[in-house]
Length: 103
Image 1 (spheres, rainbow, N blue to C red):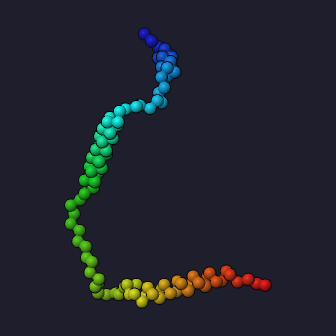
Image 2 (cartoon, one colour):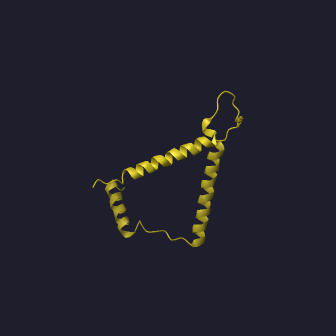
Image 3 (tube, rainbow, N blue to C red):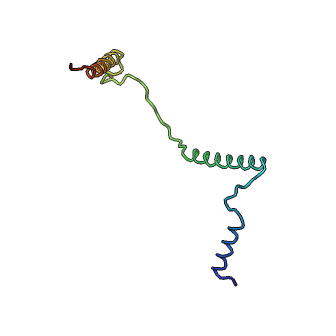
């Protein structure tokens, strides 16, 4: 019967004899087959995950813009024009403020 140190010695000997980091060379058809099987497996797993997330709740979405009480001031085009004008004036003022030189 072999002891653990005998197994260790045999394992070390086998590592020196073979290159365990060597790339496995397969024929092109085998690589393509393995690739297809792998893609099939992962697509199956993804479809199972996607199906598991599906719920059958009925969602009622109201997209009407007439809510009654208040008005959305930011939905008016003139508010956007004034906001952009103020932004541009502020940007120009900041850009020109740094270019002054005291002689």
